[in-house]
Length: 323
Ligand SMILES: [Zn+2]
Image 1 (tube, protein in one colour):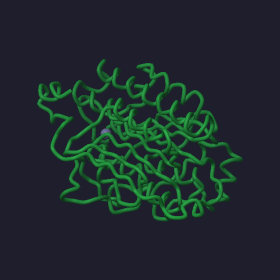
Image 2: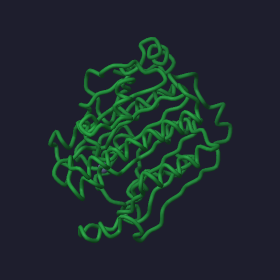
Image 3: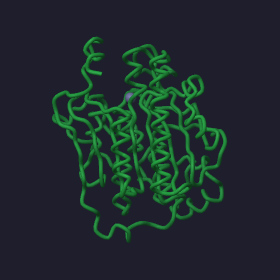
């Protein structure tokens, strides 16, 4: 890894200066009493695969993602924000706001100079209502999203460009889920983006990285089945951006088109019509948990991905509309 980075003249992604950031918060007093009535599900697992183009799923036989699409509700024509870069896009995914509102317009770890994101995250909104939240970030720039008091557990690598492999992330998620049962679990996998920058999007190396991420999703499902029970959670798998050539960030369709797949509890299988944007993800997560998104959020819940009767019950419980 270090050798590859050095040869390519890129920043070495492991072992750079700056410390990883592991945050364990004290439990919220009386958390269970704060939790609202039933939503669609008690547990949501949200997985973001960095740099995953939707057209890579079938082309490279990402069997787990193909299974999720076959059994779940999916679109391969969802869109991310501009700039189609990791930190601005994930911040939109996890705050329901566009970059002009959330302010994360850069794409490296600048927490020392610029501090943390200042708008509410999906983690903070859920935790304030008594839900346990956890996030496994595999790039240092996610330290901007580790707001105090919003995540029962979170981890992110250190340095400006620090990164962790899916293998390490999976080991850490497995260990965490031996006794934790967060209502909202977020897992970020970086492999496709890493291979895309080094070798190019849609190259054999990128294809291998997509399959690595796909296998990690299979592992997440196995761990979630064990932790929550089969059918005891809703899984959403998406991406922050695609890519072409050796980069991303533009408004080219290959950069801004992302997959969005919902699978598990409450899901109505079949292709998703209509427009799905990355800002809708945070609102969907809250709606699944029986919470309403903050009124100023740009995103709305993707209720069409879920069983109509379940969706209606959840909508009346939250008083929310959705799309
Ligand atoms: Zn990215």
